[in-house]
Image (cartoon, rainbow, N blue to C red):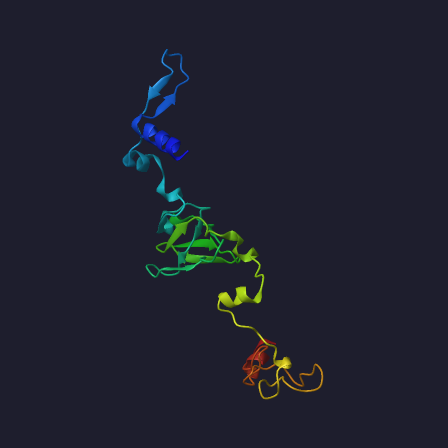
Length: 194
C-alpha cells in the first residue's frame, strides 16, 4: 500500500496539472501553470485574511478581530482567551478612534493606530470542558478550597462552635471583611447627592 502511495505521489509531481474546459473546442484538456506568489498577492485582499495582524485603521467595518492593543506598540491586551472575538462597529478611517464591541458586550473606543489580529481565537469549546476528578484541577495548579466554617477556631475566624455556626459577619482568614470590605465612603458626599 505504501508503495502505491509513493508511486502516485511521484507520478503527479512529474505530470503538469490538467484542467478540463467546457468549450466547443475539440481539445477537452488544457495545460495550466501553477500561480506564483505575486499573482496570489495581487488577487487576494490581505485585509480580509484570517490571522493577519495590522493596524485597526486598515480594517473594514464589521471585521471580527482578537488580540487587540490598548495603546500603539504595547502588545495585545484585549480578547485573547479561548474562543473569543470582538467586532469593529464604527468605520476606522473616519476618526482617530474606532468603536469595538468586546465579548462582554461593552463597546470600547480604541486608537486606530493599535494593532489587532483578524479572526477569532481558537478552541471555543474550552469553557465546556468538564474536570472529571480532583486531580484534573490539581494539574492546572488549583489547590483545594476549604470553607472557614469547617475549620477550627485557631485556623479561621469562622471556625469552631457547635453545628453550623458562624457567629458574625463574613471575614477573611486574617479578619478583614470579605463581602464589600470596610465602608470608606465619606458621609458628607452622601448628603450632597440627596
